Length: 111
Image: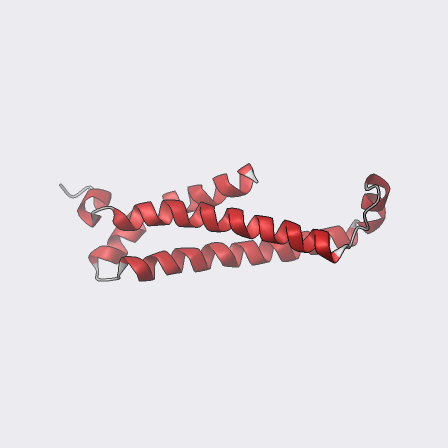
């Protein structure tokens, strides 16, 4: 969970300059915020799909490691996907909100 948060927060933080340019050119902070959330959620969906495929391909190996739980238990998979979604939302929204509230001139270092 910490890794997911760290990678997504770093991804958004690296785009502060781009966000400043978007806002300076007339994009609203809400639209920029929505764009960043959308891109983060696309990464989340791809990651969850790859994770389910990985679990499916390693089903026999994982079955020996789990006690009292089926490998492809839909409840467990949904719970993990929901947990990752909450983390991804926080990881994208916190830095994105901060970036959209900063003055574009400050972000672009034009002073």
